[in-house]
Structures are given as structure tokens and as C-alpha cells.
Image (cartoon, rainbow, N blue to C red):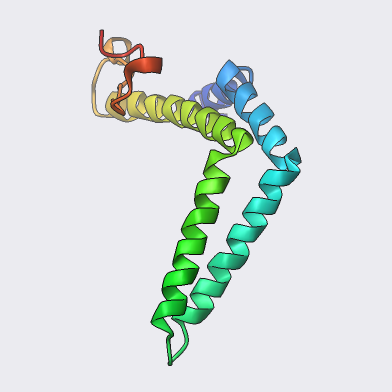
Length: 135
């Protein structure tokens, strides 16, 4: 088998041992088991379907569309305020950042860059409280 494919499999195994992967799996399980969150997600999906149904009508009721849109936004805000969802989103972001950095190193290496000199890319969200990138 191709040595690069074997190395990719080894990297996949190492990824599954990484703290960010473990944290994401734990956060996913907690979110799945959070009954209040699951009910909010169900409510959100029902409201989204109601909004889509109203939008597809030939005789749209603009007032009803606005009400449904406001209800959808309010429910979304409640979903996103849920502690389990916030933990999941933080863990997902950490994993996405890791994967993005891995992909960046591989892509730049394929373009001839020296992989040993490539640094992880830091993106600034404006809140320095949890950042270790700029300074």
C-alpha cells in the first residue's frame, strides 16, 4: 500500500487520541443526552418547517411570515444559549481549527512549502480572553 495512505491512517488514529477529538465526542454525547436541548432543537425544526411552508404558499401572509421568523430566531437563540450546545460548539470549533491547520500544512506542502516551517494559522474573533495566538 502507498506509504502516504498508511501515514494518513496513522494520523487518523492519532487524531482520535487527541484531547480535542475526545472533548468533541464527550460534548456530542452530552448534547445528545440533554433532553431540554433536544426539545428545543425539535421545536426549532418545527418552526422552520412552518416558516418554509408559509413561504411556499402562493398567498403568503406577510404578518404570519414575520411572526414565524421571529419565533424561529427566538428559538434559535434559546438553542444556542443552552450550556450543552455552547460546549459542543466550542469543542467543534477546536476540532475544526485543528483540521483546518492540518489541511493547510498539507496543501502548502503540496505547493512546495517546507512543512516544518509552517505555523498554525490564527484567526482573531475579537475576544482575546481565550486566545493565545497574537502575543
